[in-house]
Image (tube, rainbow, N blue to C red; front, side, top):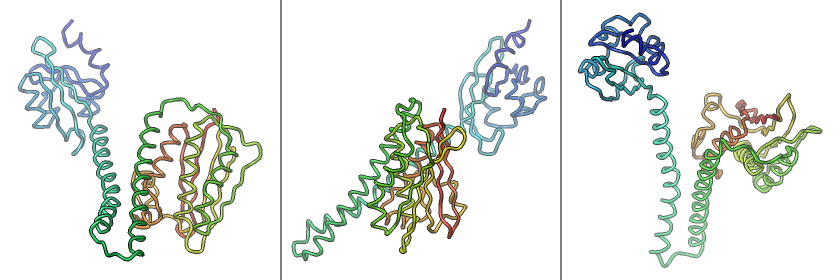
Length: 333
């Protein structure tokens, strides 16, 4: 048997696109390679199979090595190119898709930039007012009180952002750990209504609850599920209650093999184009309004991760002028 025949089962077993090349001829191409550059590439000149100057330069050099390229299978698609000797003058060429890694890196960079911006804004305010208080001795008591109050509120805002970031980090770190508790949905709803009452009263908002009879317990992390409903209720009050107040409804139902928790408001609603991005970190429909209301831009991101931690699903429905409803499905199994 030839070396190519010996190596074919191994090359076919590789997940990433892989080629065995003799000089300029493609001897073996696995399924992933055939799907990427063409099904009839075996036996052809590699220069016709891979029409990428940078990749061909590395392959035709005949030397082992690694390189980063883009443009194979898509204009911007990034690949890691690996070339290794397979003996008898043959080269094994593998392409590793870097799209996920590139996307993850972009997400990390964007997250750091957004987090820095969110913390820099209140910090700049704190520094400005603190410097004024330190340098100006003749300020009126009313100004001292106003500046001090602003420093306190902005510091609390920074603390909320840091606490939410720490929550996200902890939830992600424990996403594969089995949930430890048996949790009563009725108790969760009652606690969410109680904890949301002070904020509701400050916004002239009413909270209503409705729990169906005999809703079964779910397996979950009690603290995280409390945090989930706290965030949903706070969002409904902050963004769903206008100057005239509104009603926030918290409900729990069993539907099939799941318990559905819903938080709904009859506020302004959210335009359809914003809905797919609401669970992104620091995404805001109205940035100025969000900051004025005390939001950190992380609430729904935390909710999404808590739902994933519980193997559940999240659905957000909203209509402008009608209101918003957020549903969380928690499996009973």
